[in-house]
Amino acid sequence: MENDIAIEHSPIHRDDLGSKMGMWLFLFTELILFGGMFILYASYRYMHADDFKVAAMRLDTTVGTINTIILLTSSLCVVLSIAALQKRQKLLSMYMLIFTIVLGGAFLINKYFEWSAKIHHGIYPKGPEMANFSDGEVLYFGLYFVMTGLHALHVIVGMIFLAFMLVFVAKDKLTYDNHQKLENAGLYWHLVDIIWIFLFPLFYLIH
Image (cartoon, rainbow, N blue to C red; front, top):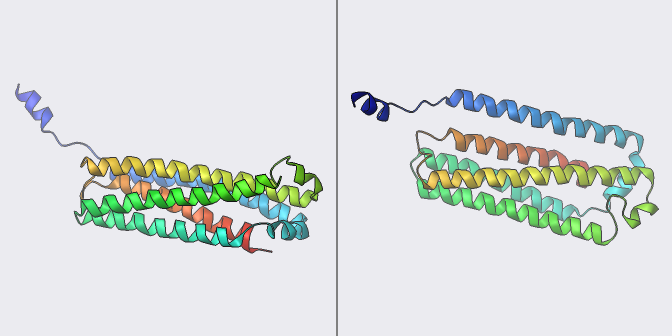
């Protein structure tokens, strides 16, 4: 009986440092993935500079700018959520997480309409309009769909990750003195934003 009581009241082991290191290692693998794609983009752009400039003119810079603002704001909300939880402001932390998820959804909606417009005009891999494009333009839009599509997938994963954190905060599984999981979720979300910060100028600004 005494052993059972001791086990029941024994402190739960937490390895916050190990958890953070594990997340940083995971993020490093993600950087390698997108880094390889950025190198591929740079190589093709060097070989087809003029074609890439022509293709970039077909993208809507306004939509890209709005999505950039959305993601930067969402990163701020994650930081505010963590800070609020550290200050024992549970409700504010939850609101900031909800707002972050909503902003992620807004980003995906904008991306959906952007992709839909391109697909409607036959601009997609092996689409009818692509037959009229040069090899460089075809490469450009191939990279555009693959890289922005993979990034959108990461946004979706990040939103799911944050949704779990929201539930954990609501159920007091994450508190002011136990918030490493929320910090890890924040790190992942910041990575999503950083990747977009590179994608935005590469596809929308460099003409």
